[in-house]
Amino acid sequence: MNLIQYFRDSRAELSRVSWPTRAQVLEGTQAVLIFVVALTLVVWMMDVGFSALIRLILQGKIA
Image 1 (cartoon, rainbow, N blue to C red):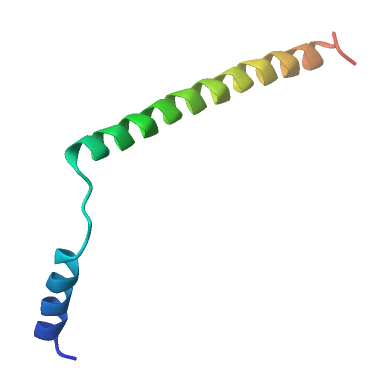
Image 2 (cartoon, rainbow, N blue to C red; image 1 turned 90 degrees about the horizontal axis):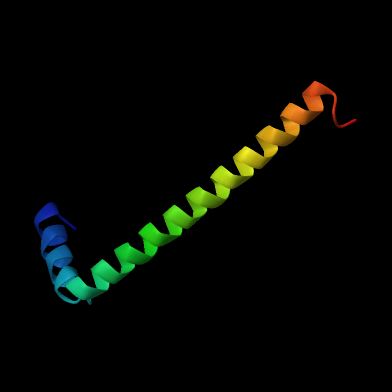
């Protein structure tokens, strides 16, 4: 297989791909952004909680 044939086959394969519509792309992007924001909030809350717990342990208030 030579390089030119490779590019021809690639182009033919790309013409058979079912590309998403703009609305589908926007919907997927929105879902990912919502998930990232939610996960960021969960990790932030865990960080605050563990920091407070470690602070109490180091101050000797929790044995």
